[in-house]
Length: 95
Picture (cartoon, rainbow, N blue to C red):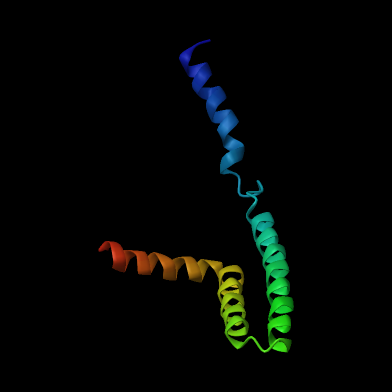
């Protein structure tokens, strides 16, 4: 195979990757995050109800705080990632 034929075949194989209609899996990732997050939040709510009836207030507030954190990570994940990157920049001394 000649070099120009090899280059042409590589370009031909790589052309679909540049197409914007090719699925990237981002929607599936978001779907999985939402489903997993909802299951986790449901478990936290059920456990929080149990702590409420047992009058374990510290555990109850801990579950509420964990639910808020998980909700933020799932439903606003891009903003949360940016906040965490900003904190890391402050800690690491980067720009």
